[in-house]
Length: 243
Image 1 (cartoon, rainbow, N blue to C red):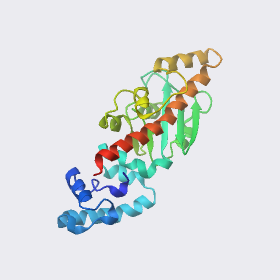
Image 2: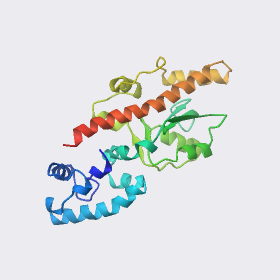
Image 3: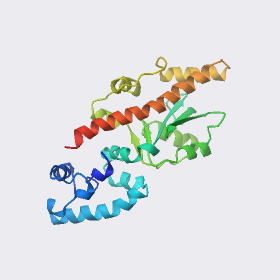
Image 4: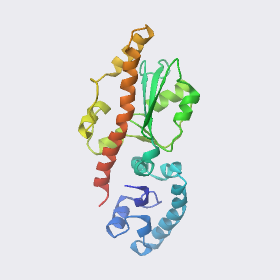
């Protein structure tokens, strides 16, 4: 589904009205006819479309993130897929006030970049790589984003698609590693747990050869695989939502 299919962002339009519009032929904004609904609703829809078209043309993802109900922000994905930033972090623990971020991997436009603590993991580099119309994570709303904000004095207010919630809507439960095989993702290396990630970092600090390379490879794979999980999840939501 693309944003041009969406009416639920209009004040007063819910799931039932939106579905009725689709079923009566207004599957996109260009197909909307005011005669398909009451005059007040039609006026609101036309006003929204007039405002939304130039916002979409200019790539203003924030406008749509604010207009859409939080449960429907997955609809941003099709329009901003090519520019989306998929990212994942590794840390020395779960408490962002006591533990530290060890590495962060970003996958965007087919390229993957990793920042490592003690090397190039800085506030400035994070800000540069997070400059995207849409951030995509798994459980990032509760973990990755607040951890980075606390650790690097950042304010990350970019539209954010946390895949954990849309995955649950289509019956994909559990963590990222449990969901990946369900959508056709195969890992190149055996699974590494969060505890393993902490162990690898500690080994790196002690100078154990290969530990950092293994940790970075694991972290990069997480970021890259997010795109496939997002693609497959949104496809399932499309089939469930559109008539």
